[in-house]
Length: 147
Image: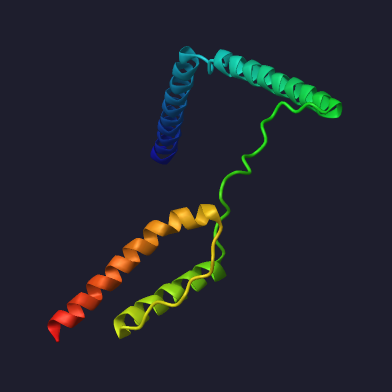
């Protein structure tokens, strides 16, 4: 009879072990329920706010469409007075001209004649030309002094 008693004891011990694990699991679940479900009031308020925002935007778009039909625009146009960006070819052309001018200065040759410019461009480039002339004169003076 010893074998039958041992198996009965083993089964009882296993059952107690499973019941203890079940009780522990149930206690964890109960603790989670005591804390309570997630508070969704903030989510609801955010959803209402988003809906109101979407409604305002739709109304504004409808009003803008109506005014567009009438010929009146509510949105300001982009500023067309901004200067356009230089193309790569224009930049390369300016760089080549500058290098040629520096080479001419270094060789002691006079600078090539520049094409005539519009009044606005001429006023802004006069300062650059004066600086270049001053640099050329200084370079020639240095070359003459070292000889």
